[in-house]
Length: 155
Picture 1: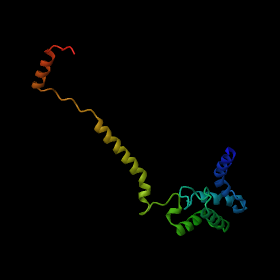
Picture 2: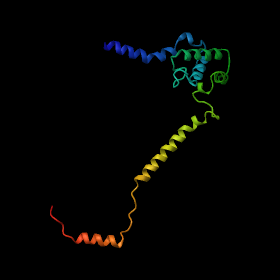
Picture 3: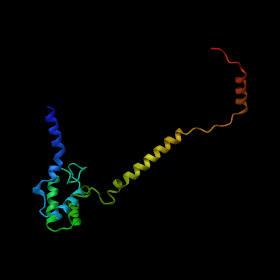
């Protein structure tokens, strides 16, 4: 039973690598293949969402890899291939989307999160700061002196 579990885990770990290195999907020219892989690393798999199309084993990612390789083989520039996919699928397909009116919250989120965290830390520190001591009034001093004069009682 242990052997089956280990084999299953190894198969799961290797599946993305096997999908990307499929020789049938690779271009015969190593320079074009390297360009296609570089472009693919900048494009998001819309199924996995947190992986590039080069890292994903989803069917859609495989189709996008083929499309990228077809366009690279046809002689298109890297920018033209990215622009084609951007036009077809929108900002979401880019792992580094452009800064515009729609994506500015995405770009501002890290700064806003950092600012919010710093504000929270400052508020907590301010609340935890010791209150400065105020001098005792004459009445309080008299009461304290009276307490000091009393003899301690045995408990």
